[in-house]
Length: 470
Image 1 (cartoon, rainbow, N blue to C red):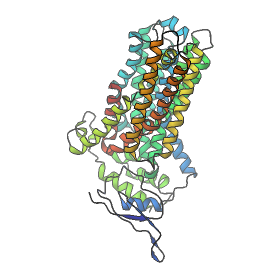
Image 2 (image 1 turned 90 degrees about the vertical axis):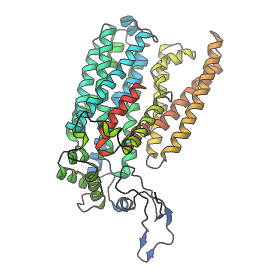
Image 3 (image 1 turned 90 degrees about the horizontal axis):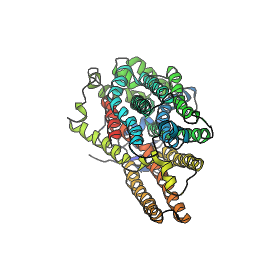
Image 4 (image 1 turned 30 degrees about the horizontal axis):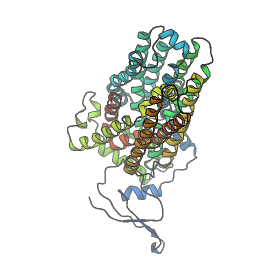
């Protein structure tokens, strides 16, 4: 792959999704008197796209841009529904009235089934999610997933036995799979090329948009002296879904989906309005239309619901899926699964009061969100690989410190050293901050960037299956 030099006055190429130009190119900055001698050297992957982005005029606070932000917010709410569950169940398990009803304990076989059936439901739902997203559109898939989650919420909130609660967990996971396949694809496909990293990273930060309210709701509901203490948090799980159900009727469909289904005029109108600043002659719009035409076939594999072969039978598909699989495996083996047992971890660190455990659960969600949002604001400028390498190393170090201090606490029995407990707690919080900074945005961005447009929905479905299996 050849590498040429590019001169420009400012800015870097942010778009990773265009494949139409396979080599690095140059575009000199030309001033009125010729090439600007003060311009500095830039390396870019696609000079034509770089020039189009520099010429594009997308007002950040125009009516169209605000509408686009709202569309991204609707997809963000899909991630909120998933994140809500992460803080919800770890807190609900610690509630006395939940234990009086289900007698599940906070660890052990019953808890394992309650947690794992959520992921099993997500695995089973992933292939259906790809079908819905490709056949009926991203908006309808998000809408359908919302209704499935609300159904699961009703089953869970009215449960009196573990078996019914487990069925509810399966239904919730199924609905989450539908939403979390459609939503990230929608987010990246509606965003202008130079906004895509931030838009998709912001989508994945929806995990904290759900986990923080869940931690706050469970903290407050713990004071209710009845089954409502655990039922109300479960009912509020439907809140983000209600926003999606209402919001999808006021947002445009993905231009990629429109072109794939023979509605090119509608796609062109979308791109002109939201990416071209209202200019039908925008170079950026022309390049995007050209890229989608090249990569989308009217009779492509996204029209055949069962055909996942392009993900693995071609060299291009295998290379793209290898990146998707790696970020999925690394993201799950980074230690973030511990979040389901936060209250148990706090108890092991000497924090035995349930209100204190729930308070720390809320604080952990807040500081983790700060790390994730900081990374999201930098996503379009941060190099992917160095962040993953050094971020993962930092995760290993902080988690290792926590593990060592926790082992020390375990050897002390009932005579827990306060300083050791505080050190273990601080290391655990640092781990969550680093993990959120490293993986939260990139787990949403990298799979979408790696997957070609005509295999994106199925690739994300396979990614969801792999993540939940891990």
